[in-house]
Length: 167
Image (cartoon, rainbow, N blue to C red; front, side, top):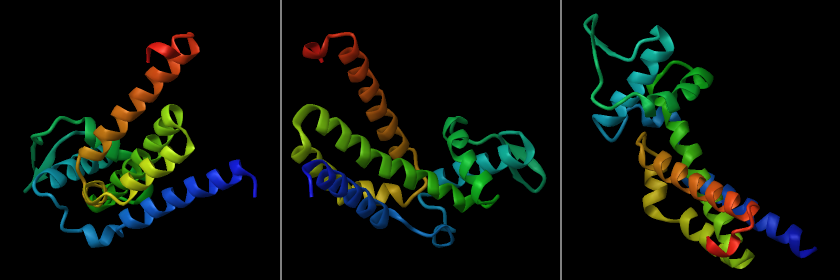
């Protein structure tokens, strides 16, 4: 098997492992931990999906959630795809958590080579904190993913402009 195919198989294995370790069926997450943040994020997304307003309704009285609406907007596609249940927002954390593993491997490949990419991906894939965050509705996985994505685009832009040695 050529080296390139072997690397692709290794990368896909690490991503599959990350997915399996982080996957938690949404019906197991009906408790919506950690409270109260997960509840507010999920119900904010559900309210946006069902009513077009960013509010949590209790006894027919709308209340504004404590956190800003940004993360609830990120949860909105999961609510639209998997159904209007608050715990379906868990799939967004899963997606971002596996994305963190993928971007870690991509950046390690860029700077240190294929072996380092496999090692870095493996370390993040089996890391307890990232696994735990991927199983809860919280902003940590999205923040890490967006930070790594921004780093990737900055490095890619610098490389295209011929300033690779400065990055």
